[in-house]
Amino acid sequence: MQASTWLFQGLVLAGVFTLSPILAQTAPPSGVYTCVDAKGRKLTSDRPIAECLDREQKVLNPSGTIKAKVGPTLTAQERADAEAKEKQEADARALLLEDKRRERALLIRYPSKEVHDKERSEALAQVAVVVQAANNRVEELQQDRRKLEQEIEFYKKDPSKAPPSIRRQIDDIAQSMAIQKRFIGDQQNEIQRINARFDDELLRLKALWLAQARSKPAAANAKKSP
Image (tube, rainbow, N blue to C red; front, side, top):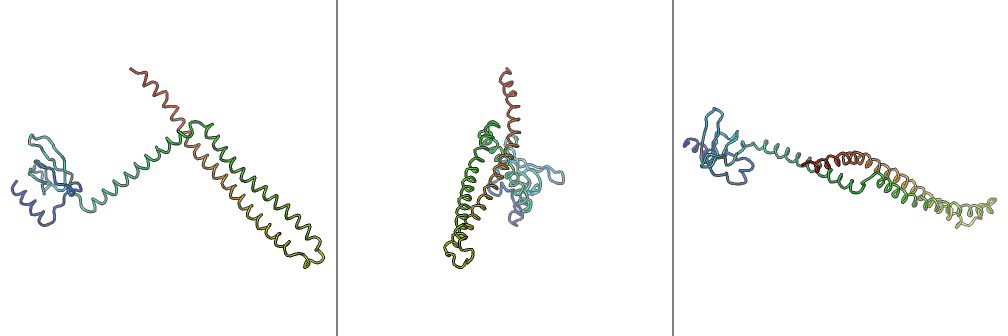
């Protein structure tokens, strides 16, 4: 045991010995350390055993029961790999929890297909109102343009005598109609986006509704069981 202690102290002084990520942040647990080294020797010490840095060490209570286990010391690269893996697993768990939360929220918002269909219809109806208003505006602009074209017809033989204001009004109307048509096109895209969203939700909801329906009889049977 004394030789093991001297070796451990020498490694510490030389900067060779590195505790595991947990022990590097806190003091090693007190107790009797025991392990079997690479040569098959069972070693014991009152502190972490240098010969067993590459394997698990058990920390025993005075009664001989296991108080703690100290994992093998990791290299800097091994620690980085372990931390990266742990972060990846934590991210995956967080994504899974977020998906479950979204599914619960979806079921609360849409307990049935009728509710989902109704909200789709309402969303589409709102866009339809806006599109109708834009179409009405286009019709008004077309009427204004026809009136101006009738006025400018009087100057057909000599267009140079046509008042510049009429030309400006016709140009303004053309620009306004182009704006309204672009706006109507945007609303058509919005209709497609709404339908795509509700279609995607419906696929998820059908699976959730089915799972929910299957779970109800199982829950009822569990309550009946003594």
